[in-house]
Image 1 (cartoon, rainbow, N blue to C red):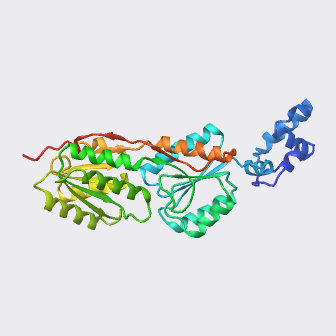
Image 2 (cartoon, rainbow, N blue to C red):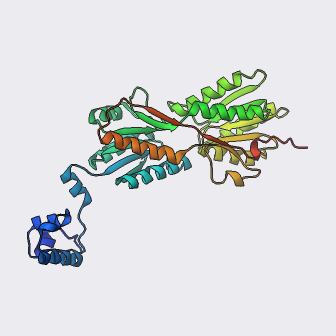
Image 3 (cartoon, rainbow, N blue to C red):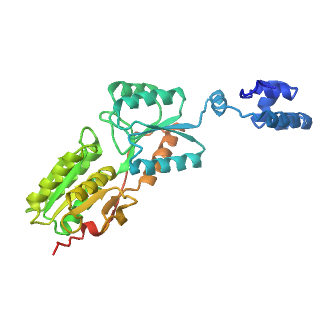
Length: 343
């Protein structure tokens, strides 16, 4: 028997079954046909008695496969990230892989830390929703040749498969909807642009679309999620300058949309009556907030599932050039953009 409280080993099983480790290994690896009925029964009894659980990682390493996939997420508190992760996890289960998830909390330094950690677990592939990797992290990835797919955010000067939303198309559809609703002034609110390509692509499509409609006012503002005072100032300033016109706010993602709704509540501004509001990402509470908030819904679950499928294709030897796979979003119209002026 093994020491009290200690995890049983294959040696403990062999000793209890009065056989060698080779026979126990054959039993565990499905080669039971080469064992006698009596020996199989003894091994089964020993495993049950010791509550033995083989180390899946050790067995995988012995075969040269771990069946592990690493996922590095920029912000697990973002509903977008949660839904993407659900799609990835579903694909992992369907393909017989196990997912190891790491949350960087939008901290660049954490990306390198988690890359090293996942490497130590010998993951077979990795899916990354990047913050903005440092040079040393990129160098590591290029040298490791680890199969990798980026979700949503690209990494400058890094050639890699990418799966995400068709950002230009989505921003154009959202902006055109506001124009069709006769909003004369539109404020595009985003988190700091930095090197996040999705924010730049959406902003550029917004500007281009607004430019095609003379007589409209297009403005932009960068506000951090943790800066409510600045957000209040930006929204009130925009409202005071355009309150006599049909004006609306277009928000770059779900997390910031939540902050904008809170700010409007603090300022006493009603969406759908005093000011229009449209946010990227479908939020579970969007239809319940006042007259409802119009959203640009991303196929987040499908994006995650597709990203994992691409990683597996790379693991299995696909050597085709890196590709970018984009999906269209869906505009869900609610009361926040059905302009109804206050009497």
